[in-house]
Length: 373
Image (cartoon, rainbow, N blue to C red; front, side, top):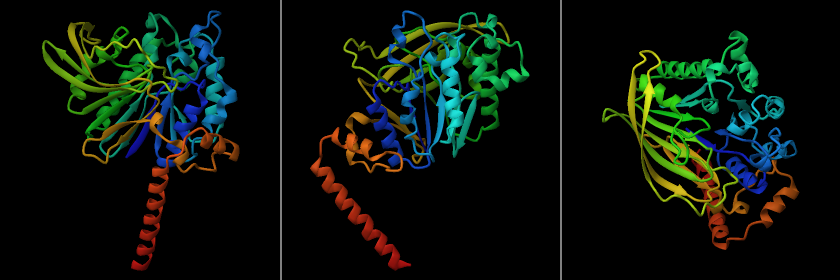
């Protein structure tokens, strides 16, 4: 089983997004693509007038370049949901597009999961963790009324805190129901540990109560909300006893810019106090975070392949891809777009020669197999 994940989608650099989509189309037929977070205007972060985020509908033709047979899962980001949280115009436009477009789009508007072989992929929303006083904020007063409309039909007058609890209960039930697995991959928008921001307690409080249900598995956390690719190991301890190990991948925004002032520290330790939801007992958790890999100015996607015994992740950096040497799917791109992409890259004569010999070898194998029959 293979699936692809990449982080924040920002349309100011259309060429990078095109390169990602073309590469995925031509290398991973009928696979799962999970992408999302912040389909917004580049000027949105510095929006002094506090205007609503703009979903750039004139760029939807880029998303339509995705092969129809790819199964695409859409995860929204904090800019989509939390900027002007009472306003829903931009989010409505996005949801309507994905529902009306017959391109295999699936919006993550609830806790959803995929089980393939021995791997369980759980997708959920973490942006709501950032809402202040969630027990006092009604879902119906926020943009979440659009995303969790099915939940609201049966749960009127519920708060964001109720929604957070609902998600965690759903995650636990999914894990209990699918216990014949080796790996659990959590996919959401916010990092579990981010070096330059505060710890969000919600998931750690859940871990404090329910870690026993997941500590037998190999755990991964895939997220975005960053301008650089980062792989790290999170170790969670209580009373100096290890509870969990989680490998975290932060996949860069596709408009990632070089960070010259990067902190070169690679090991972190944070102590937090969490309170059990059921016993009211407080515990001290120690969170160790060791960064294993950082890529500055990385633009690309994460590929998971469970052909290996325990599964394996690889970051595919499109900065290192010579896009015009990839077989472009002409059903998805018109002639003008193809020529534009081809002109944007330099030729690689060695790669051309390699591909010619590779094609000859494939044809010879086909002839051989034909005569065998």
